[in-house]
Length: 143
Image (cartoon, rainbow, N blue to C red; front, side):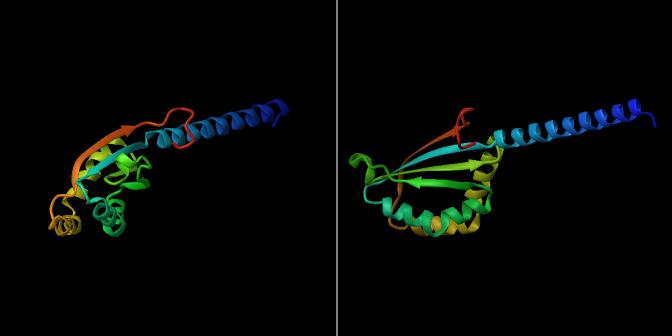
């Protein structure tokens, strides 16, 4: 094989390898960017925050995970006006469609239905739920 033919084949291989690396990185970025975050704020009935926290601690997080809903973190506000009745948490889903599907499955989960009913024996826990789906900004360290 001639030297020029050998150089051409080497250059072609490098170009092909570069193309596949680019495609792989692009596909990985697309997968990472397809995740959607969900910020949820639960406003509890007076005196019910500890019951709600116990539900999440004891079974909700485990059941959420079983349905593809990943917990990122849970917080109670420092503001005294909110601290006694508010739980804020961040979830991550593979996509918005997956989030909606997973929430529907979670709501029908027999274990969740049974445990939630037990926790409501002393009356309702939640007064209001706020939920917002979020896409990370291009400069966000969490994507």
